[in-house]
Length: 139
Image (tube, rainbow, N blue to C red; front, side):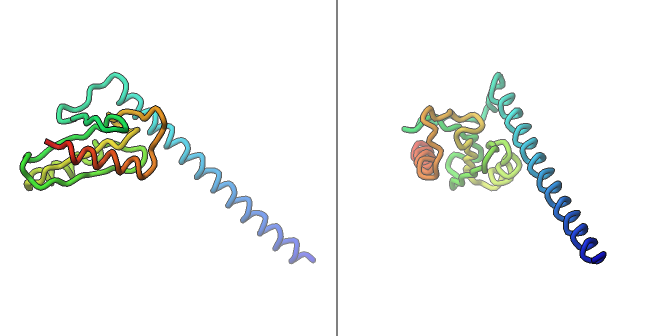
């Protein structure tokens, strides 16, 4: 009976440790998202966009993009992930632009300097429409 109690105690300690670890991970991720959102709010409110930023009007709202490289170079579009912005691509964009590419680093709405859709349409199809509109509007 002593071995059974010890085994259950070990399982309980392992389970409790896993729960504590999972809770710590969730709290860390939540804190990280809050910090990123605060940083984005500070950047978006009161700061001016970089000089290379152009805003394209699309049927679903304004999309900001940082343009670099020769205007006649082959275009390449850099698209960030969630909770990011075009500034994350700065070094990559500089590298590509230096090799002759026309770099279009997008601020995918609702992030960065792009507008916010009043109807909250940020699904893949709507985002694809926005990107296509930017490509069509390039000078």
